[in-house]
Image: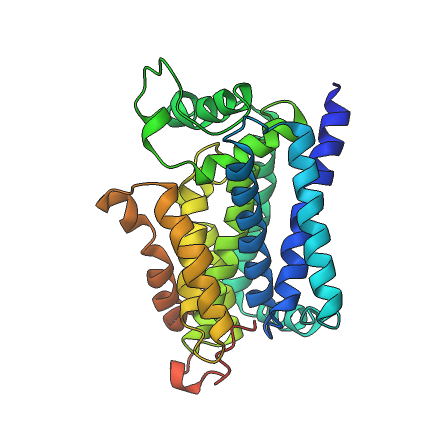
Length: 318
């Protein structure tokens, strides 16, 4: 299969997963754009993980069955969406206007400019250079390729690295999906890149949850996105950002006191996925304390008023 055909199938498959997550999130009738986008991300991951586990015992996990499963999931969610009265997603227009207005703050504008330059480099590094990280080569990519070869998740016989069988598989399932759909490992960095975006949204949402204003939330998100450890991880074929995205999304939804559905989403989707994706050492867990530190800095660097003076809207809307 040519690379162009593989890329087309990858776009179709990921588009189907994205549409499934988006329609399912619409059914939750969430009010905030950040809530909606993060819920879509988590629900798309949920269906991919569930589908992969369902197809693995009988060794039915192939490109065709994966695409068929994605189509079935999309069909089920579409029927549910129609029966619920076709609820709409929250409008992004007002949120985008407020984000644009936040660029008037010099600190935010400088960080966003740096982020724009970094984004070009990150994408180029992710898709146009081969992975050369030791962990990625020794077990992240290796286990995904071996699962592809044996048509399902399972024990890898004769593994000379215990991590191939020891660590739970959730984060690498995304890499496996890209390999199955595209027929190559060029796009195995997509899970990390998507998690990078989800992390930035979660940090901005957390700032709004604790009553910081839009300007402070934009600063915190941009500052987090330009942290060296985050930028280095984003174009890699590892799984640290994927784990971080689940955990920060769980924290974000866990602070939603007004809607039981969002709390259920956090407990039922984000937290188990984050715990099962990787066993983190204390030093690795400490990396994800950075959102809190970023939020604390936002109030000092971007606003002359205290958090009490910020908007009282705790819905997470930018």
